[in-house]
Amino acid sequence: MTFRPAPTGSVTSTFYETWPTPVGGYSIDAANNDLRTTLPHYQLVRQRLALAVTDPFINPDTGHPVIALGYPILVKDNFVGVASAHNHVSGLSELLARHKASANASPSLPTNMASCWPTRCR
Image 1 (cartoon, rainbow, N blue to C red):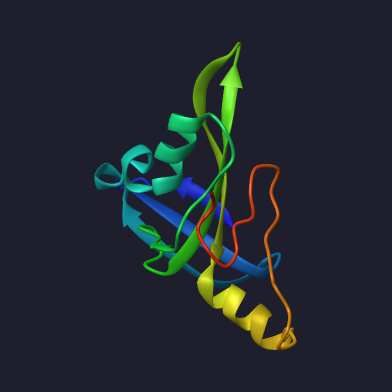
Image 2 (cartoon, rainbow, N blue to C red):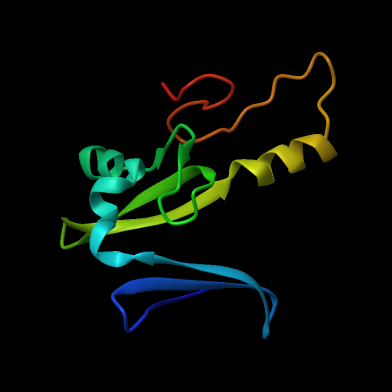
């Protein structure tokens, strides 16, 4: 994926199956998309200064449901931003469809703080 400001004040992203063959992309109005306020994991990380995992939400860039992970970026103990990743819910659904759990399985997503599946992080 490439991400670059477009000359019109929008943000344009292009997605590649393999370089240099694009498979899709989109543009959004950058002026109306302050990620510090529109992405829930940014605020969670800023409050906790620790790893945060969100409930599913609609990504304002793509319009698709995602689950986000965020981790604080600190410079001399001062919060300066968030490193993040979005996992598309459709991708998770496809993964779970290919790798079925047995009837007695207890799936979990372990973290250093809590278990985050199948209920909210505690």
